[in-house]
Length: 239
Ligand SMILES: Cc1cc2nc3c(=O)[nH]c(=O)nc-3n(C[C@H](O)[C@H](O)[C@H](O)COP(=O)(O)O)c2cc1C
Image 1: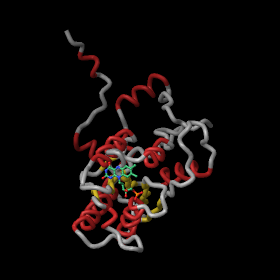
Image 2: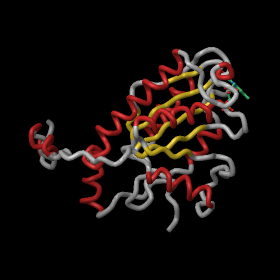
Image 3: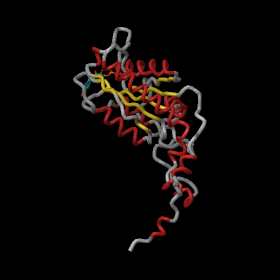
Image 4: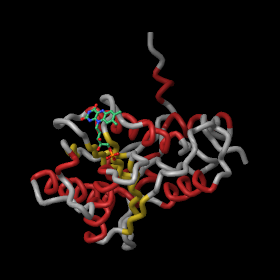
């Protein structure tokens, strides 16, 4: 026989009362958006695509910063004090949304892309540098259109507790899509990129003031009540 007392500590969720906990006065500062791309080479189409996203978002009114992954060491769980590692962690703490652009290599995201995410801890003391951020995922390919990298980026976004928007972009034969200065040529692919950035911008405005409420978890509150704190997560920088 089941014991209904297990439900005694469930928080109340009267729809009206729960809705009333959401922010009513929206923030007005420009959405803070971090762009990550996954290539170290000089002429990089994933960087060009990231920069194109940045230009579009800036036109929409966002404040955009892009992380240059060159010089970031391979994740070793110990070099937390290196300037590039600190820069990446600082940028993600600053951000309210991310744009992730990875090339597809051997049917997957690049090591250069994954390495950046590996350096970002899920929790760092009370700070959760990615949790609750909105996320747009994009990929570039040398071949025909495929979705292997964006599918993996979605899984990674879930792992980092981010809100990945439904729309996404996959740019095939990327070497044909950019001009000599790195600007994306007009095409249905570019229109799609604008669609994705528009969606990211709107979702960020919708969610950013309510991240704390949306991220409160019953199981974690219970753990805090029982143990006084959450158990430390893996990948946390030593203090
Ligand atoms: C080792 C290697 C593997 C690749 N594998 C794929 C692949 O599986 N599918 C594909 O469409 N393109 C593949 N490409 C092409 C890259 O996606 C393409 O060159 C892309 O522009 C690289 O990103 P970047 O310009 O930002 O450096 C591969 C390229 C390299 C060097």
